[in-house]
Image (tube, helix red, strand yellow):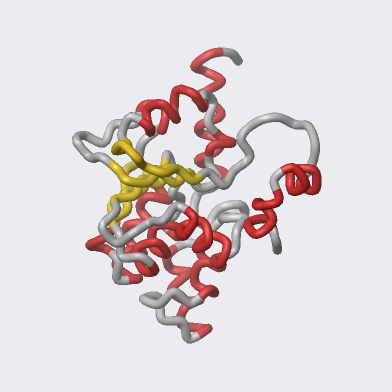
Length: 205
């Protein structure tokens, strides 16, 4: 397959792979509610077990919070999160900082989970979610102080196009955080850490 047909096939494959309840996707809302109850977790808190059980990230909660701090995110900021998944990132950010977050994801199942879990976690007033393809991003008149791409850029077929659309929504002086594999197949994690030691805190188990 070539052109748009191969793009469509890849998009549908990614949606199937990362849907809630699949082996690579996050737990369903029902499964998470059972987990919270079983472990005696209050979803309105920032207990690390919440984030690390409900997300499909490779980063632990302390590393994600370290990135929030590096981006100097403040309560009054509006943050755009691309590849939001089931909302684990935005929920943690809303609870730990108190800012407003707009999350975007291609997967309608993940967006539905994000919306339902926002109420469970008590952050519904601070978060909003849209099912959109980052390559055709449209968010009206919204403008953002920070952009966070959560381990999703590796799936974008045209990073330049998608990122240019996102950057057009940022206010002057905004900051961008991208914990992700951007491109290429050379080298490994050890080599990357030698070249950029500051990555160590985000890659540590």
